[in-house]
Amino acid sequence: MLGFTFKEMHETPPGPEWNIAFEAFCIHARNLYDFLRHEGNKNTTYRADDYVHNHSKSEAELLFNNLDTFLFHMSTGRIDKKKVDLADVQKLGKWLDEHWSTWVSSLEDRFATLVDAKAVCNQCMFSAGVSETTACTYFTTTSVTPVDTFSSNGFVMRS
Image 1 (cartoon, rainbow, N blue to C red):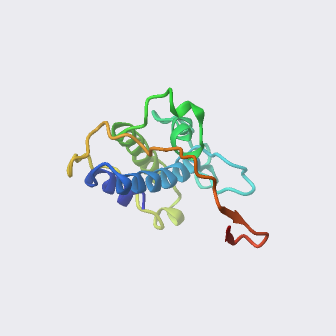
Image 2 (image 1 turned 90 degrees about the vertical axis):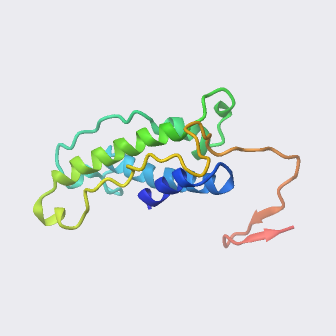
């Protein structure tokens, strides 16, 4: 899915469909980024160092706190900061591909046969009118009061 959504961002013009691809890519990228950087509680989270001891924990050029501002949280910082664009996503994809490949090449044989080391974020096409400066998800406020509430069983109730 990481490779598919990366490709979709390069083939889809700006708009809602591009935002869907961007958001989906970021979810998969964040999971892989956290895995490769040993984020999360070792007792409850799979991490790269569970399989390759002493696996390095280098920083990516695009840190996920930059994406937190625009995607994962309703941050007030989204007004003042430079939006994450396709060039940023390409840098992150390159980092993920490189670190995944390095990790896979360090696996014991019993694990190495279970995963593929090939790069999936290597498309650098600008087709269908997508430019390097395509901004990330936009948020528009309205004066409408939300009418959906969640019941105790988790279902949406309309009022």
